[in-house]
Length: 127
Image (cartoon, rainbow, N blue to C red; front, side, top):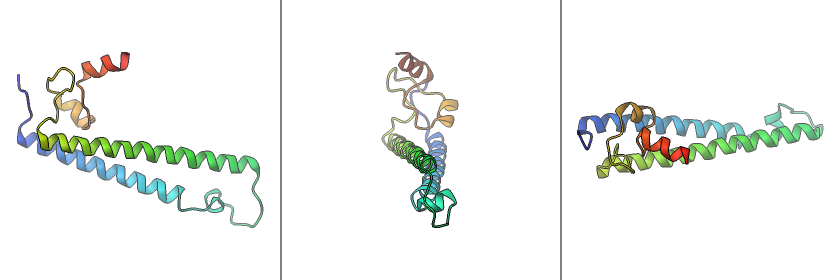
């Protein structure tokens, strides 16, 4: 049984990771453009000078908090993808951190930042 991926495979995974990073960066930019750069009036679509209804203000605040939470999750994903790139460089990419076996290609194509094989991930999630 192989213990590491060959260079050609690692190049393929690196491309997947870089594409995923680009997608996440675009998502973060989109969220910040929509959420942070608009005033509350623009966000609500109200460009008149009238005051807001409390429920509208609460909804707008909730939407902003929700969007900022999504951006925070995206930043965490970026960190994990960067970490996967480092593992490619240091030769530990695709090796389960628990059982030290090779993580399947299928899993890594779906979740390129995975640190655990499916079996070890399931054990971790169960408790």
